[in-house]
Amino acid sequence: MLTGAFPFDDESDESIRARILAGEYRLAGPVAPPPTSASVDLIARLLDIDPSSRLTIADAKQHAWFEAHPTNSAVRD
Image 1 (cartoon, one colour):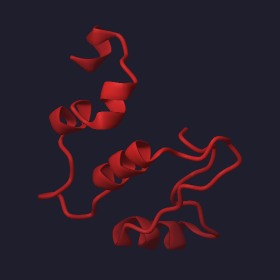
Image 2: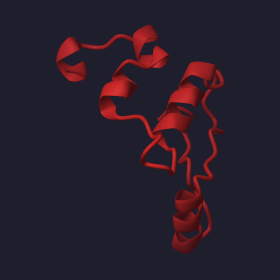
Image 3: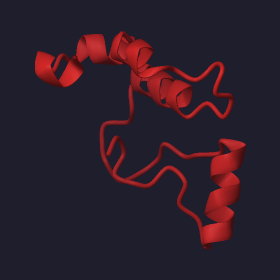
């Protein structure tokens, strides 16, 4: 949704699975403007392959990107 392309897109399901497990993703796509540094940081921290350092939902909701893009409080809580 951020760029208009899948982050783990590849030729086969096996290749996609390998990319997911390795944390290899792309934030490129046909949508302009390019992703902001805050959105890139949020995605990187959400897709961290190490569960102990990956953002929790509570941490993600406090991230700078969400602070800059407020939504309905019922959705955030």
